[in-house]
Length: 364
Image 1: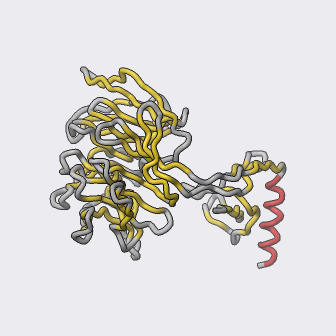
Image 2: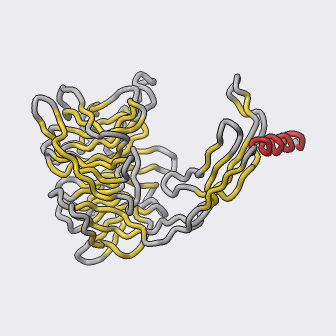
Image 3: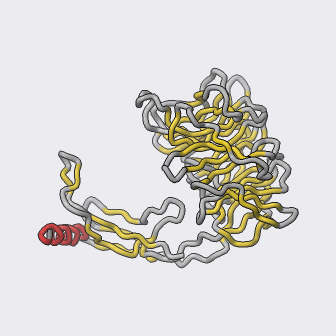
């Protein structure tokens, strides 16, 4: 599918921080990122521009399983715009979303059937309850409100909102605790800005009853909280040092945090009580880090698994999964070829922009 963007320009009053003219298109045919839909372009201080001319970007994927040695097995070969795939605790089903219709589906590996479990609103980012009977997800209604919902995986009961009325906005479900008591969510505290607009990590009672518990909340952005199988630790990403990196700290217990990643990193998950996985943005690898819980948390060793062939994630959500036993990883793999985008550099480009905007202003 061709994903092309247009770059617009307008006059801007720096002092008042407002536009003083209507936008005018100044560059067409920009390549865009599929995941975040942003044009691939940059402008230098001297007025030169560098951009990628639009090409075809793959969105169709298979769902594959990779073991620790890197051996790959295809679990769902039929291509589709799959996202947010999660393996059920017993490995028999995969819950996933589709980027096209924003509904949640369950693929049954035994029967080969795919069934929807959501039908209204824009639903995404599902996660299994630890017993495999329920799925949590976030959904945005036609009115624009976002909530965390839980639905029976067999469709026997309608979905119910479990975060309604809680003092958090812009929430996003990320994971369940292994005992089924809590759903870990990202969101912003609805406290008149006392915490700030950045994301924080909260624990939401899975039943929907009882108060929301704040787990990590600072003026930085903390996201994608993942609790260890024994319920003692939570891993998450934070950008308080500039780049997003992976940290571990006690879950709902006092104690300090420990930096686990050695550079920019996202997508933490637990392979066992003492093993954490995350994506290194420096090497485009899945890192398996073995933790040492002594007087302080240390990293005993790290191993790498190539992640470059699979769909990338983001600071806000994992685009891979780890099996309950920690031995397999679930990825989305492209089945389509991408036409290589062509890099283009234009010198003194800002002069053209000024002429185009001036022409538009005179024509008003």
